[in-house]
Image (cartoon, rainbow, N blue to C red; front, side, top):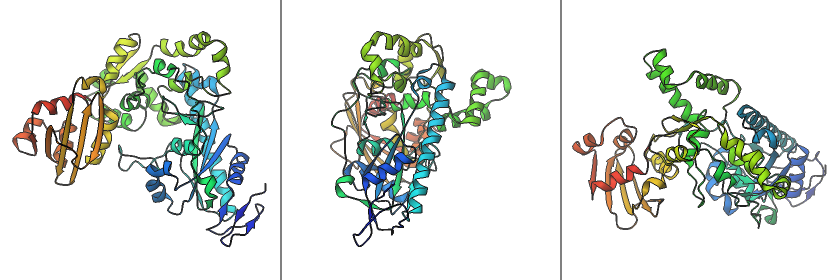
Length: 447
């Protein structure tokens, strides 16, 4: 491979045998070629200073302070295993492609290091930085970087759709201690989103997480699909600890579910559904049969997933619980605690964005000012209007209800360790405004 780069004096260097200084500039096309040689099915580059990376830059720099360039890589998955209602086949494909993507990224890092260029590859999925879970645990958003690098667009199912391979891709990112030409580093957002907006992902989602109007119920997806991961695992451990006997445990967790936990611990955690990806017909390599016979696509790909009898993990009082009961009465509802919970005020404010239930907001139109004291000094504004929620730092506008709370007491209240009546009686939580608005607020987060 001929690999063009500029040293700190601006002289071009050719060939893999050249060792570059730490401040050398790299040819973007050469980086992409390197990625393809290392096994990626597609690749793109973008500067870490590009505006689409704004939300991730702090975390990238924390992990790799000298990062200047991001190399996004795509590895395609095989379609039929992902489409199979037999989830072990789908999960095998996810795991194998995930390992392959990590291996490709690692080979790229090795090649760059041999050239004297520092590089770091974040895991495709897991492990993550979970010290502050359920707050953000990922170092870099692979979807965000891939989209900025021109490798696809995010569809209504919230996954990246590659223009050729469609939704059947996994993504990785290599952070590189070298710059690229200004034109290479700019965002290359595809003009046309490959998403067909066919809404097949809406119809296939077993918990109704993808709404026809574009809203995404993250908590519904997380609680069901990731039940074998993270928060779901914590809840299972608590079920074990809280059980008085084997019989008591068996009344809460079925024999098959316990075996599923063993399988996830032994071979990698299993997703309960990736139906939104499975049914997606977008992408040049994928769309042909769908355009030829859309009815056949629905009958052979969509309906087997809809018709499957399976446990669906939902929390009581949520929009997902209502949806499953109405749309999929043949599937078995398994009541579980939410897979995420607040551990501090920041995770509370982060979590309500993800856990908001628009179906429970009804006609609520209210502005809340939260003032937290004690261990965490935080002020925030939450607005619920037209079945949508916004969260802002500080106090914005005129509130309909003001909530003053000791931070630790508020977290204990959320986690049902102490009653609201006791909190109000001890003035650890104080309200200024109609208490009914706090009740209405709680309805929007029933879990």
